[in-house]
Length: 425
View 1 (cartoon, rainbow, N blue to C red):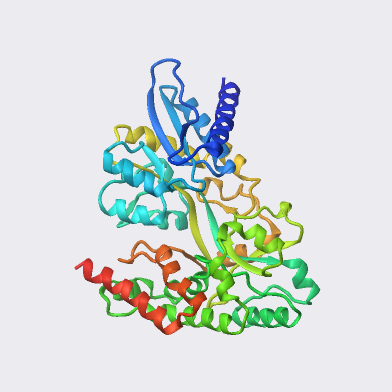
View 2: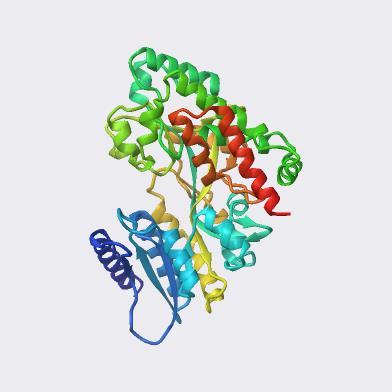
């Protein structure tokens, strides 16, 4: 029965992805809604652009429906192709109309917003939340409540073309000074060192902000930032100055970088537009590239730092009528069957304690594993701060690609902080 259901789910998934690819604006497809016997239905909304995630969710659904034969998961994939609304816009519309699904995936901005408004159910007492690794739990907790659980975790960092590095006699950098040395040698030998992009050049700033978490006084620093006693630029200025330096030296081509989209990283690197490029650890499949790669951290002030994040954050809507059944389903995300589906994907890191020992390691990510062991890691978003950082930083750092100064953008970051501080009083 289980094998039959998986086959049916796979066929439904293939139909969903096929229809989504051809659909226009507001395309919506239900992939596994059925009408056998009368069952409780819980609906899940997520994007339809990641086959690995879909396969993992199919595995989780199969495990869950074996455990709970009285419940069916109706799986809706939303197409986010060109010309369509993004998932956040769809969620906004459905919440406003009272027609939101029982479960959905949300980005950090919406979790920050809807969590504060009481729209998301508290998952703290759920089996899934109890199984989270400490870092995944921290990245899922807002105001003391676990409001989301992920499919896995990923690291943000630097993809490196190792063929060019070896040709130039270079080894992987272990700190800012070594990173700059690599850039200088690469430029001298005719290579563009960094393929900068809109949105992710901010990682140079994020990595430097790791000082907040690695200098041993985190709670006190957060408290001072939340009252405005300290400005965020105190911890971010070096990062802004480094971006300015890399642009001035020609290691980042500012105007060209402003036009690049992070999602096109494979095309950028295959065309030789940069030896280094920043993105998430799961964005490329090394086996599909024409050159050897490594994935490392981002230069901070404590060596190379690995910013971390949950991947696919699932939330349960508080106003839904099936909160407990949804919690039961989310506990299956950490199952062995789900992990097995994910294990072949490069760059994924465990989010659940039950899967930590089973997750395969890849030598091409050795520096990331070392950073995790040495605690040179940080989350890209800290929910304990009164202002949102990760998404907002792109709009503050990106103007530097077209001429804005480090000083002016430090001031802009401080202004964002103080607006939130004043609004929270």
